[in-house]
Length: 493
Image 1 (cartoon, helix red, strand yellow):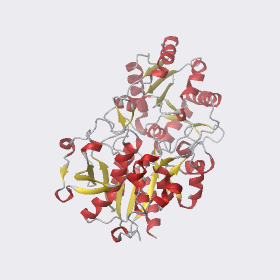
Image 2: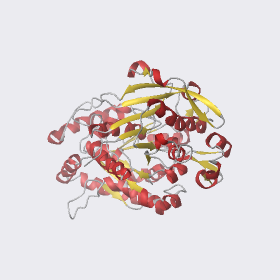
Image 3: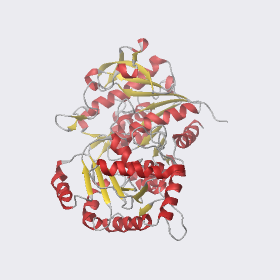
Image 4: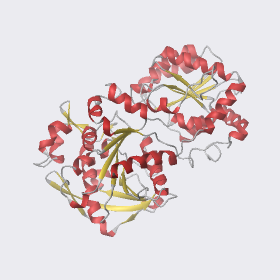
């Protein structure tokens, strides 16, 4: 019989309160699905200055005011506010300290465009505060579900500082890894904020990483269970140093406690039947309406609409080399030899500005490059494109390919991580599959796979079956929540 659990879900960002990455979407959706399974789940997040109290009806919690939080040799004061995730009964606690969190950006100083210099101190405080707040709250969680480096010290603290505290005697930890490129690596000068005399014994082996302190490494070593966001990615990070960003040996050492769970998507937000950010709603049964979105997209970008011309889209953040931008650049001239239109949405980056402008001048009727953050355009691209090209070298899970499938837009992806787990390559011999997958990460392999997709697009019978097959797939958070629940139950055994 399934046990009802007390689950504390901790994240540095939660949609809709604040968002810089897909972690916020996970934190805003998964707890709702777990709540529907009858678990007592509560969320913790820092009270950033960007979060509007009035908009989300955030109120003070009288018994959680002015709590002492040890941080190294000093005491830092926190107070806690509370609200609910919109359209749910999931309670969210906001950890307040104006010196640390009342800023215009979460992680980055907008003036310097670099990380806040005290990010280590901020998230040491946040992680340590959880324990002190819980004792004041008199709520003992069965599971503390941590996410990424910002909360990865919690398993470490639980098994060092609080190991003899009876309040946490039956509490277990799960650490979910969404982004290995960010590990919380800092200079050793911040060590005194983490450790007391007892904990110094752990620093060299657990937190030390290439001469610095690594928060994520500490979490991986001390969490009771660890999960990455796809089964394929779990295999990759144990075998490939590059995919694991140097932590492959640590993952191998924890292999018996390492699992892969794919993310889901929130169908109340990502649903072509009800999406209020696209001009025309549609479903599998009236797929022709999707063409109207294609026309709206193409014309909004200054191109000429022709339903027979395939529209390929790509959405990139340009955060690092993992996103395959260089491979796209290498094949753009060859791509433009085909009868297609290409819409690229990416975060503005001065490094590539001149290069991108040269492509626009060269192919003004076939290519559009948008360098801005535009959520309505993102939704319209999923609804209006025929294909979305997702060229990541590595991808722990990925959500864009799942959005594609939901909207009947066919993904073209590299066979890595969550992309490999969620996109099945179309095989013309067996007539199975619903996407196009390239095994080798190279511009040539990417181009050949794009050509395969274009060939299939020209056969409307094949293409319509691909769309129908894609839209039948189930990637709701209810499915993901069931898999997380299995991990929670495993911990309690």
